[in-house]
Image 1 (cartoon, rainbow, N blue to C red):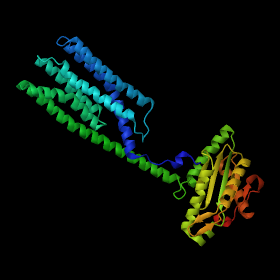
Image 2: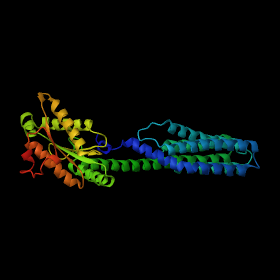
Image 3: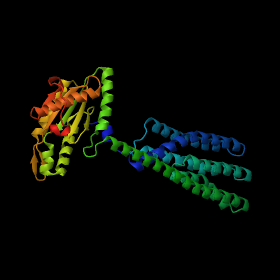
Image 4: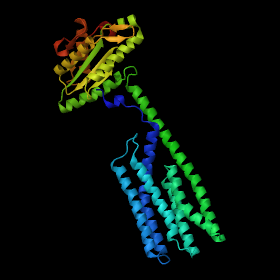
Length: 389
């Protein structure tokens, strides 16, 4: 069949944006997982003299365990990146592990916080606010995860301070609540900005992909246009010269195509061209290159194929086209074509001229036939395109 880049279209925008946001999130949070474990170790060291070592070590073990799950999931994504349209359970596991990690931080902070010392309480609150600020930046690509992390970090300790009823603790709780509300707003603005920028980026990428495709693909038949076909063919010709592998070119021109348009109308003529293009796509190999290089003229480049084998391919295509009538709403029509075959032995332009001479010879010999350039005398066609139809 035709090459994959002939069929490729723009990526699905929401899926592409989601994938890039996930990649950005993983890149940022990977390093943050190690840093936050270090922060937890510092907090344990600060509270070591005021709190039970067993309690602190148990809490620290939970931090290391949940952080390890995040790191393992990151490595999984790194080794096997998700496809654009993949709905991956790994993403759900990563989000669940991340929220569990911050829940352990938020609820565990109350468990390890010495209740008799305002100074120690302020220290723990300071650590939690610092982590919440970090979460806003680290998870900026995913607003729900931002809010979930900040809420899990601050709501438990803020609620506890409010529940104590004393003025100093109410003041600390108020400060924590103000930061929580501010972080929530900042998180939403930051996540929205990132989302907008990524959407604009991928819209531009898609627009460029569409423009590039339109510049290279024939809109009616979805085959390469003349410009693209010639560019790819020149590259293939250069590669064939380096490797010594055979490369052949087949030109085909529909016979009496003007009569089809005159008898049945241009809409049926367009259907015929699409019918021929579909037949070519379904009949040739993935490595072959097909193009529409003129009004009713098509070309096939056959890598790894000698002229003799290309002649066999062309004959099979000629028979298939001729023996299967083209059906349209008002009846059927026999469509046939003339073929010219040449092997590319140097410059592609030379092979193109040789195949064109062979095609012209097939036209002058009665049409609906295949001619190999080695079997014909080079001829310059008089009168342009109309002379051979």
